[in-house]
Length: 376
Image (tube, rainbow, N blue to C red; front, side, top):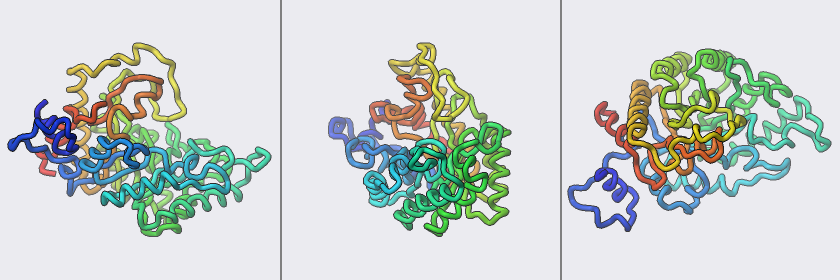
Protein backbone atom coordinates (compact mmCIF):
# COMPACT_ATOMS: atom_id res chain seq x y z
CA UNK A 1 0.00 0.00 0.00
CA UNK A 2 2.98 2.30 0.56
CA UNK A 3 3.59 3.04 -3.09
CA UNK A 4 -0.06 4.04 -3.58
CA UNK A 5 0.12 6.41 -0.60
CA UNK A 6 3.30 7.93 -2.03
CA UNK A 7 1.51 8.45 -5.32
CA UNK A 8 -1.49 9.97 -3.61
CA UNK A 9 0.65 12.43 -1.67
CA UNK A 10 2.83 13.44 -4.57
CA UNK A 11 0.21 13.83 -7.25
CA UNK A 12 -2.68 15.24 -5.25
CA UNK A 13 -0.73 17.25 -2.67
CA UNK A 14 -3.32 16.57 0.00
CA UNK A 15 -2.16 18.13 3.28
CA UNK A 16 -3.67 15.38 5.41
CA UNK A 17 -1.16 12.87 4.11
CA UNK A 18 1.88 15.17 4.02
CA UNK A 19 3.65 13.51 7.01
CA UNK A 20 3.93 10.29 5.01
CA UNK A 21 6.35 11.92 2.55
CA UNK A 22 10.06 11.24 2.70
CA UNK A 23 13.03 11.55 0.40
CA UNK A 24 12.78 7.96 -0.85
CA UNK A 25 9.06 8.21 -1.56
CA UNK A 26 8.75 9.13 -5.23
CA UNK A 27 5.57 8.75 -7.26
CA UNK A 28 5.30 6.25 -10.10
CA UNK A 29 4.96 7.64 -13.62
CA UNK A 30 1.58 9.06 -14.50
CA UNK A 31 -0.65 7.38 -17.05
CA UNK A 32 -0.08 10.10 -19.63
CA UNK A 33 3.70 9.93 -19.17
CA UNK A 34 3.86 6.14 -19.11
CA UNK A 35 2.16 5.90 -22.53
CA UNK A 36 3.68 9.00 -24.08
CA UNK A 37 4.65 8.26 -27.66
CA UNK A 38 2.12 5.43 -27.86
CA UNK A 39 -1.27 7.04 -27.29
CA UNK A 40 -2.95 9.73 -25.22
CA UNK A 41 -4.74 8.71 -22.03
CA UNK A 42 -7.96 10.50 -21.21
CA UNK A 43 -11.01 10.58 -18.98
CA UNK A 44 -14.65 11.63 -19.33
CA UNK A 45 -15.49 14.50 -16.99
CA UNK A 46 -18.57 15.65 -15.11
CA UNK A 47 -19.18 19.30 -14.19
CA UNK A 48 -17.94 18.99 -10.60
CA UNK A 49 -14.56 17.98 -11.94
CA UNK A 50 -14.02 20.82 -14.40
CA UNK A 51 -15.65 23.61 -12.37
CA UNK A 52 -13.48 23.18 -9.29
CA UNK A 53 -16.13 21.61 -7.05
CA UNK A 54 -14.20 18.34 -6.72
CA UNK A 55 -10.62 19.36 -6.01
CA UNK A 56 -9.33 15.82 -5.39
CA UNK A 57 -10.54 14.50 -8.73
CA UNK A 58 -9.49 17.72 -10.44
CA UNK A 59 -5.95 16.98 -9.26
CA UNK A 60 -6.09 13.39 -10.50
CA UNK A 61 -7.24 14.59 -13.91
CA UNK A 62 -4.49 17.17 -14.24
CA UNK A 63 -1.82 14.75 -13.06
CA UNK A 64 -2.83 11.66 -15.01
CA UNK A 65 -4.56 12.60 -18.26
CA UNK A 66 -3.72 14.58 -21.39
CA UNK A 67 -7.11 14.23 -23.07
CA UNK A 68 -10.66 14.86 -21.86
CA UNK A 69 -14.18 14.05 -23.01
CA UNK A 70 -17.44 15.46 -21.61
CA UNK A 71 -19.90 13.01 -20.11
CA UNK A 72 -23.01 15.06 -20.94
CA UNK A 73 -22.50 18.81 -21.32
CA UNK A 74 -22.19 18.75 -25.12
CA UNK A 75 -25.10 16.40 -25.73
CA UNK A 76 -28.07 17.90 -27.55
CA UNK A 77 -30.51 17.98 -24.60
CA UNK A 78 -28.05 20.01 -22.51
CA UNK A 79 -26.57 22.39 -25.04
CA UNK A 80 -29.64 22.92 -27.27
CA UNK A 81 -32.74 22.18 -25.16
CA UNK A 82 -35.21 24.30 -27.14
CA UNK A 83 -35.44 25.32 -30.82
CA UNK A 84 -34.02 28.80 -30.36
CA UNK A 85 -32.12 28.25 -27.13
CA UNK A 86 -28.48 27.23 -26.77
CA UNK A 87 -26.89 26.86 -23.34
CA UNK A 88 -23.10 26.82 -23.51
CA UNK A 89 -22.44 27.68 -19.87
CA UNK A 90 -21.08 24.29 -18.80
CA UNK A 91 -19.63 23.43 -22.20
CA UNK A 92 -17.57 26.63 -22.13
CA UNK A 93 -16.20 25.75 -18.69
CA UNK A 94 -15.33 22.25 -19.90
CA UNK A 95 -13.39 23.59 -22.89
CA UNK A 96 -11.70 26.26 -20.77
CA UNK A 97 -10.55 23.56 -18.32
CA UNK A 98 -9.00 21.57 -21.15
CA UNK A 99 -7.26 24.58 -22.64
CA UNK A 100 -5.97 25.74 -19.28
CA UNK A 101 -4.41 22.33 -18.70
CA UNK A 102 -3.11 21.91 -22.28
CA UNK A 103 -5.24 18.85 -23.03
CA UNK A 104 -6.53 17.27 -26.22
CA UNK A 105 -10.23 18.14 -26.05
CA UNK A 106 -12.99 15.90 -27.39
CA UNK A 107 -16.57 16.92 -28.23
CA UNK A 108 -19.14 14.23 -27.41
CA UNK A 109 -21.48 14.04 -29.30
CA UNK A 110 -23.31 15.67 -32.18
CA UNK A 111 -25.83 13.12 -33.52
CA UNK A 112 -27.26 10.34 -31.35
CA UNK A 113 -30.64 8.70 -30.92
CA UNK A 114 -30.58 9.27 -27.13
CA UNK A 115 -30.64 12.47 -25.03
CA UNK A 116 -32.21 14.44 -27.87
CA UNK A 117 -35.19 16.71 -27.03
CA UNK A 118 -38.47 15.65 -28.71
CA UNK A 119 -38.77 19.01 -30.49
CA UNK A 120 -35.87 18.08 -32.77
CA UNK A 121 -38.03 15.52 -34.58
CA UNK A 122 -41.42 17.27 -34.29
CA UNK A 123 -43.16 20.45 -35.35
CA UNK A 124 -45.04 22.73 -32.95
CA UNK A 125 -48.10 20.45 -33.21
CA UNK A 126 -46.17 17.31 -32.25
CA UNK A 127 -46.19 15.95 -35.81
CA UNK A 128 -43.04 14.34 -37.14
CA UNK A 129 -41.08 16.71 -39.40
CA UNK A 130 -39.91 15.83 -42.90
CA UNK A 131 -36.42 15.10 -44.21
CA UNK A 132 -35.71 18.67 -45.31
CA UNK A 133 -36.62 20.16 -41.93
CA UNK A 134 -34.61 17.64 -39.93
CA UNK A 135 -31.56 18.04 -42.13
CA UNK A 136 -31.74 21.79 -41.61
CA UNK A 137 -32.05 21.36 -37.84
CA UNK A 138 -29.10 18.98 -37.80
CA UNK A 139 -27.01 21.34 -39.91
CA UNK A 140 -27.82 24.36 -37.75
CA UNK A 141 -27.05 22.47 -34.54
CA UNK A 142 -23.76 21.02 -35.75
CA UNK A 143 -22.50 24.21 -37.30
CA UNK A 144 -23.47 26.29 -34.27
CA UNK A 145 -21.89 23.93 -31.73
CA UNK A 146 -18.80 22.95 -33.71
CA UNK A 147 -18.37 26.49 -34.98
CA UNK A 148 -18.36 27.89 -31.45
CA UNK A 149 -15.39 25.70 -30.53
CA UNK A 150 -13.55 25.84 -33.85
CA UNK A 151 -9.84 25.45 -33.22
CA UNK A 152 -10.45 24.60 -29.55
CA UNK A 153 -12.12 21.20 -29.60
CA UNK A 154 -9.72 18.95 -31.49
CA UNK A 155 -11.95 15.96 -32.22
CA UNK A 156 -15.70 15.27 -32.37
CA UNK A 157 -17.78 12.14 -31.96
CA UNK A 158 -19.97 13.15 -34.88
CA UNK A 159 -22.31 10.15 -34.95
CA UNK A 160 -22.81 7.91 -31.95
CA UNK A 161 -24.23 4.37 -31.87
CA UNK A 162 -25.90 4.27 -35.27
CA UNK A 163 -25.81 0.48 -35.61
CA UNK A 164 -27.83 -2.40 -34.20
CA UNK A 165 -26.19 -5.55 -32.90
CA UNK A 166 -26.53 -7.29 -36.27
CA UNK A 167 -24.60 -4.51 -37.98
CA UNK A 168 -27.57 -2.92 -39.71
CA UNK A 169 -28.50 0.73 -39.26
CA UNK A 170 -30.44 1.44 -36.09
CA UNK A 171 -34.04 2.42 -36.82
CA UNK A 172 -33.59 5.77 -35.08
CA UNK A 173 -35.61 8.93 -35.77
CA UNK A 174 -32.62 10.21 -37.77
CA UNK A 175 -32.72 7.18 -40.05
CA UNK A 176 -36.51 7.07 -40.28
CA UNK A 177 -36.91 10.71 -41.27
CA UNK A 178 -33.73 11.48 -43.23
CA UNK A 179 -32.58 8.07 -44.41
CA UNK A 180 -29.21 6.33 -44.22
CA UNK A 181 -27.38 9.37 -45.55
CA UNK A 182 -27.96 11.29 -42.31
CA UNK A 183 -24.56 9.97 -41.21
CA UNK A 184 -22.80 11.28 -44.30
CA UNK A 185 -24.48 14.65 -43.93
CA UNK A 186 -23.55 14.94 -40.25
CA UNK A 187 -19.87 14.46 -41.05
CA UNK A 188 -19.97 16.96 -43.91
CA UNK A 189 -21.69 19.59 -41.75
CA UNK A 190 -19.09 19.12 -39.00
CA UNK A 191 -16.23 19.40 -41.49
CA UNK A 192 -17.68 22.60 -42.93
CA UNK A 193 -17.87 24.08 -39.43
CA UNK A 194 -14.26 23.21 -38.56
CA UNK A 195 -12.14 21.79 -41.41
CA UNK A 196 -9.24 21.06 -39.02
CA UNK A 197 -11.19 19.03 -36.47
CA UNK A 198 -10.84 15.25 -36.38
CA UNK A 199 -14.19 13.54 -36.92
CA UNK A 200 -15.13 10.15 -35.45
CA UNK A 201 -17.78 7.47 -35.58
CA UNK A 202 -18.31 6.04 -32.06
CA UNK A 203 -20.05 2.82 -30.98
CA UNK A 204 -20.10 -0.07 -28.51
CA UNK A 205 -19.68 -3.83 -29.02
CA UNK A 206 -17.81 -3.45 -32.30
CA UNK A 207 -15.68 -6.38 -31.13
CA UNK A 208 -18.65 -8.63 -31.96
CA UNK A 209 -18.34 -9.96 -35.50
CA UNK A 210 -21.72 -8.94 -36.95
CA UNK A 211 -21.66 -5.40 -35.59
CA UNK A 212 -18.00 -4.95 -36.53
CA UNK A 213 -18.72 -5.95 -40.12
CA UNK A 214 -21.55 -3.43 -40.26
CA UNK A 215 -19.27 -0.69 -38.96
CA UNK A 216 -16.50 -1.62 -41.38
CA UNK A 217 -18.96 -1.42 -44.28
CA UNK A 218 -20.21 1.94 -43.01
CA UNK A 219 -16.66 3.33 -42.94
CA UNK A 220 -15.92 1.93 -46.40
CA UNK A 221 -18.98 3.63 -47.85
CA UNK A 222 -18.20 6.94 -46.18
CA UNK A 223 -14.62 6.92 -47.42
CA UNK A 224 -15.70 5.92 -50.93
CA UNK A 225 -17.88 9.03 -51.00
CA UNK A 226 -15.07 11.24 -49.79
CA UNK A 227 -16.71 11.83 -46.40
CA UNK A 228 -14.15 13.29 -43.97
CA UNK A 229 -14.05 10.55 -41.30
CA UNK A 230 -10.81 10.47 -39.29
CA UNK A 231 -11.33 7.54 -36.97
CA UNK A 232 -13.54 5.08 -35.16
CA UNK A 233 -14.16 5.02 -31.43
CA UNK A 234 -14.46 1.61 -29.78
CA UNK A 235 -16.29 2.47 -26.59
CA UNK A 236 -14.57 -0.19 -24.51
CA UNK A 237 -17.34 -0.94 -22.02
CA UNK A 238 -15.91 -4.31 -21.06
CA UNK A 239 -16.27 -7.00 -18.40
CA UNK A 240 -13.69 -9.22 -16.77
CA UNK A 241 -14.19 -11.78 -19.55
CA UNK A 242 -15.53 -9.94 -22.61
CA UNK A 243 -14.33 -9.08 -25.19
CA UNK A 244 -11.30 -11.29 -25.58
CA UNK A 245 -7.90 -9.84 -26.40
CA UNK A 246 -8.19 -11.55 -29.78
CA UNK A 247 -11.51 -9.83 -30.52
CA UNK A 248 -10.08 -6.44 -29.62
CA UNK A 249 -6.91 -7.03 -31.62
CA UNK A 250 -8.89 -8.10 -34.69
CA UNK A 251 -11.22 -5.12 -34.42
CA UNK A 252 -8.40 -2.58 -34.19
CA UNK A 253 -6.54 -4.24 -37.06
CA UNK A 254 -9.55 -4.32 -39.38
CA UNK A 255 -10.34 -0.65 -38.96
CA UNK A 256 -6.68 0.19 -39.42
CA UNK A 257 -6.77 -1.51 -42.81
CA UNK A 258 -9.38 1.05 -43.90
CA UNK A 259 -6.99 3.91 -43.21
CA UNK A 260 -8.72 5.31 -40.12
CA UNK A 261 -7.34 5.69 -36.62
CA UNK A 262 -8.85 3.90 -33.65
CA UNK A 263 -9.66 5.32 -30.21
CA UNK A 264 -10.81 3.51 -27.07
CA UNK A 265 -13.33 6.10 -26.01
CA UNK A 266 -15.33 4.98 -22.96
CA UNK A 267 -13.22 2.41 -21.15
CA UNK A 268 -14.37 0.69 -17.98
CA UNK A 269 -14.37 -2.90 -16.69
CA UNK A 270 -17.57 -4.19 -15.10
CA UNK A 271 -16.69 -6.56 -12.23
CA UNK A 272 -20.28 -7.42 -11.31
CA UNK A 273 -22.46 -10.29 -12.56
CA UNK A 274 -23.84 -9.50 -15.99
CA UNK A 275 -27.35 -8.09 -16.17
CA UNK A 276 -27.14 -7.16 -19.83
CA UNK A 277 -25.32 -8.00 -23.04
CA UNK A 278 -25.61 -4.49 -24.44
CA UNK A 279 -24.35 -1.01 -23.62
CA UNK A 280 -27.58 0.62 -24.78
CA UNK A 281 -28.43 3.26 -22.15
CA UNK A 282 -32.15 2.63 -22.70
CA UNK A 283 -31.89 -0.85 -21.19
CA UNK A 284 -32.77 -1.34 -17.52
CA UNK A 285 -32.71 -4.50 -15.40
CA UNK A 286 -34.62 -5.27 -12.22
CA UNK A 287 -32.79 -4.98 -8.91
CA UNK A 288 -31.52 -8.27 -7.49
CA UNK A 289 -29.10 -8.74 -4.55
CA UNK A 290 -27.27 -11.38 -6.59
CA UNK A 291 -26.35 -8.65 -9.08
CA UNK A 292 -24.77 -6.52 -6.33
CA UNK A 293 -22.40 -8.91 -4.52
CA UNK A 294 -19.78 -6.39 -3.28
CA UNK A 295 -21.66 -3.50 -1.62
CA UNK A 296 -18.97 -3.05 1.05
CA UNK A 297 -15.80 -3.42 -1.00
CA UNK A 298 -14.13 -5.47 -3.71
CA UNK A 299 -12.59 -8.76 -2.51
CA UNK A 300 -8.84 -9.07 -3.02
CA UNK A 301 -9.26 -11.93 -5.47
CA UNK A 302 -11.52 -9.84 -7.71
CA UNK A 303 -9.19 -6.87 -7.31
CA UNK A 304 -6.43 -9.03 -8.77
CA UNK A 305 -8.68 -10.15 -11.61
CA UNK A 306 -9.36 -6.51 -12.40
CA UNK A 307 -5.64 -5.75 -12.38
CA UNK A 308 -4.92 -8.59 -14.77
CA UNK A 309 -7.77 -7.57 -17.03
CA UNK A 310 -6.54 -3.99 -17.30
CA UNK A 311 -3.02 -5.20 -17.95
CA UNK A 312 -4.28 -7.44 -20.76
CA UNK A 313 -6.35 -4.63 -22.27
CA UNK A 314 -3.48 -2.14 -22.29
CA UNK A 315 -1.13 -4.77 -23.68
CA UNK A 316 -3.49 -5.16 -26.64
CA UNK A 317 -3.89 -1.40 -27.11
CA UNK A 318 -0.13 -0.82 -26.90
CA UNK A 319 0.43 -3.48 -29.54
CA UNK A 320 -1.15 -0.97 -31.92
CA UNK A 321 0.77 2.16 -30.94
CA UNK A 322 0.11 4.85 -33.52
CA UNK A 323 -3.00 3.17 -34.88
CA UNK A 324 -4.63 3.49 -31.45
CA UNK A 325 -4.21 7.19 -30.74
CA UNK A 326 -6.19 7.61 -27.51
CA UNK A 327 -7.47 5.52 -24.59
CA UNK A 328 -10.16 7.33 -22.60
CA UNK A 329 -11.74 6.06 -19.38
CA UNK A 330 -15.45 6.72 -18.93
CA UNK A 331 -15.05 8.45 -15.59
CA UNK A 332 -12.25 9.14 -13.13
CA UNK A 333 -13.08 7.25 -9.92
CA UNK A 334 -15.40 4.39 -9.02
CA UNK A 335 -17.79 6.63 -7.11
CA UNK A 336 -18.79 8.59 -10.20
CA UNK A 337 -19.01 5.72 -12.68
CA UNK A 338 -22.27 5.24 -14.56
CA UNK A 339 -21.82 1.52 -13.89
CA UNK A 340 -23.09 2.06 -10.35
CA UNK A 341 -26.56 2.72 -11.74
CA UNK A 342 -26.70 0.96 -15.11
CA UNK A 343 -28.34 -1.31 -16.01
CA UNK A 344 -29.35 -1.89 -12.36
CA UNK A 345 -30.01 1.10 -10.11
CA UNK A 346 -28.00 1.39 -6.90
CA UNK A 347 -25.31 -1.20 -7.49
CA UNK A 348 -21.78 -0.71 -6.17
CA UNK A 349 -19.34 -1.21 -9.01
CA UNK A 350 -15.55 -0.88 -9.26
CA UNK A 351 -14.76 -0.38 -12.96
CA UNK A 352 -11.99 2.25 -12.99
CA UNK A 353 -8.38 2.72 -11.85
CA UNK A 354 -9.16 5.01 -8.89
CA UNK A 355 -11.33 4.02 -5.93
CA UNK A 356 -14.07 5.88 -4.07
CA UNK A 357 -11.48 7.63 -1.91
CA UNK A 358 -9.62 8.95 -4.97
CA UNK A 359 -6.76 6.49 -4.41
CA UNK A 360 -5.11 4.47 -7.19
CA UNK A 361 -6.08 0.80 -7.17
CA UNK A 362 -3.80 -2.17 -7.87
CA UNK A 363 -5.10 -2.03 -11.44
CA UNK A 364 -3.49 1.41 -11.80
CA UNK A 365 -0.13 -0.05 -10.85
CA UNK A 366 -0.65 -2.94 -13.30
CA UNK A 367 -1.24 -0.51 -16.17
CA UNK A 368 1.81 1.56 -15.24
CA UNK A 369 4.05 -1.48 -14.83
CA UNK A 370 3.01 -2.81 -18.21
CA UNK A 371 4.13 0.44 -19.84
CA UNK A 372 7.46 0.38 -18.01
CA UNK A 373 8.13 -3.21 -19.08
CA UNK A 374 7.19 -2.47 -22.68
CA UNK A 375 9.12 0.77 -22.79
CA UNK A 376 6.12 2.74 -24.11
